[in-house]
Length: 220
Image 1 (tube, rainbow, N blue to C red):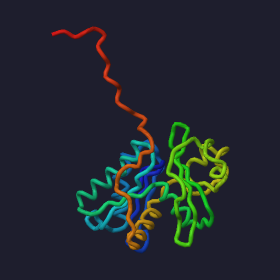
Image 2: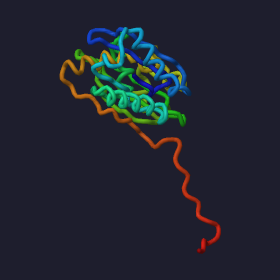
Image 3: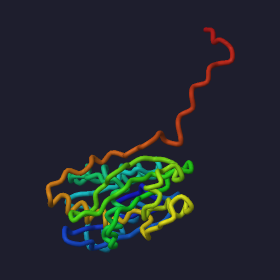
Image 4: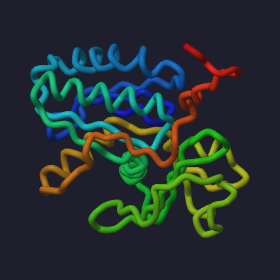
């Protein structure tokens, strides 16, 4: 599952192929959509939660609130079911969808970071698959080095900043199916995945207000 981008996306993988997948494009309803989508995908796959053997979740980077919805849900399910929970950089998950679609050369992934910025990472395509060569980081698209802005680019950044990122690839958000396919392959190869902890590249937009000092001394 992943909620780090604009989409809420969930898939079930049986170790060989994706057997069910759904995605909903709604930036403001991640909390309301994730649990019903999990139920729908399990029902489509003919499974119950106790049939799962592991959970994989995109850990961002992504907007603070939406990202936490997926990570907390995955960790809660893993604890309740007694199964492992694996984290994946959400930009890497988009990159694996790009690779699955047939990309054969170096490319960039740039997702919406709000504040007129993008979360970004650069990737090479090798015989072994896709390899991250730079990032993840956060910056204004126009401030990225020219050699990165000139790359084919996936993610919502190409829609938001087409002048800075003019070479658009079709993939916009995380595909839970591509994420699951990557994770099953990585586990089969004995690779170590990330802990299911949110990957934050900056402080959240909402912060507690500083305590106000009284205008006059307080006496007792």
